[in-house]
Image (tube, rainbow, N blue to C red; front, side):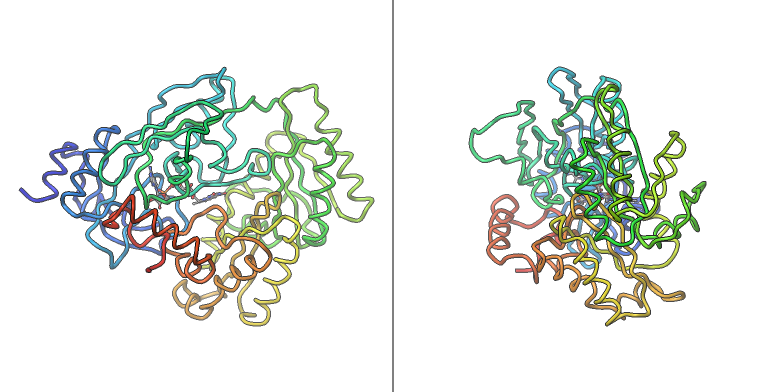
Length: 470
Ligand SMILES: Cc1cc2nc3c(=O)[nH]c(=O)nc-3n(C[C@H](O)[C@H](O)[C@H](O)COP(=O)(O)OP(=O)(O)OC[C@H]3O[C@@H](n4cnc5c(N)ncnc54)[C@H](O)[C@@H]3O)c2cc1C
């Protein structure tokens, strides 16, 4: 019996895929940049099977690459091309909701539930789950927690880490850490769950999570505002935050991004005349209809026009209009992939430093890669801008990366110099390991390596991801 036969015996043959064509989607990342063929794709149905699988993989010396919705933008969920013999462990069959408690304002979901399924379950219970990003229909609870995903509502509700009450995790040796608590306060020692959130599958496999819910949003108001530059956007953000409009999103979008979605998106309508280089997509919302959100937002935006912060304003009058604005924002990654290869970054700086960050990045590009195009949009409300250097026509990704070798690192350095981070919400995966080596504090790296060595001494959990070689 081959080692893989023993795994097939554990899970049943249908849950141990070895056919190359069936494994193909698990062997390439979402952007099509990273490839690595696993020995098998394993699909356990419950926590006991995950535990047994990890125990057997430990016995066989196989590396394990956990996979959720495989929307990682940094090559996290595919095996390394030149890595050790690996299996992909897909959580997709573990998609049960174990319970919703409206009074506790919490929900327990297995790792394979999509973020959208969690949102829908919360809505059915008369509650609201705020994590929201473009890939939410595919991204899963385990993947979103493992990358500590952010998205558009971080400004009000925090990122994925802030939404977790407890976790169930299978350790590399197969032991199960059952910490699926629903309590809001627990100071009984180290908060172990936070080790696994953002660990990108390098310390264990998240099998279920207890998540925070909130009262539903009864009323939303959405606006698109033309601004001359990010400096005006920053002042407008402060004005809106002080207005009582209760912001749930404040996105900054370069004009070039709107033009790209108009070119490649489906059913996208031009939202206004694009007379300036930058736009703010703002959403305010309240949990009760009696709260005058629209009035507060309108007053703030009109005052913004008078103060020279805003040039033009569209406040949505219909759900279709609102949807069109969000489609522009959320289909941008897909449209940008169609437009041209890019070198993406995912930085975060203090909110007040966003304009300087963008000015310095623009100057860097003009000085070193003038043939490329700066494309930037992101979560202005939390300082997380996604800035990419787009290739000129006819240049493919590999060639462009070779022509602009220091770009991602230089942008990461600017963010760090401004007191920020070179990795905000997408994780490190394979793509940002060089930045980890160059820009992360050596003491922090020492601690991370010590934790990794304690939990995964053989280095079999998602090898080649997150930590740079020692
Ligand atoms: C169009 C688009 C828009 C996006 N927008 C955003 C955005 O606004 N904000 C944002 O934060 N991200 C965004 N992302 C990135 C991505 O969707 C998130 O990182 C998401 O959280 C990944 O979830 P996933 O289930 O697809 O994880 P995967 O890609 O499957 O895995 C991600 C990492 O987690 C590990 N992992 C997966 N499941 C588990 C588990 N159960 N236990 C342990 N480790 C596990 C994997 O090994 C990998 O390292 C976007 C992606 C796309 C394609």
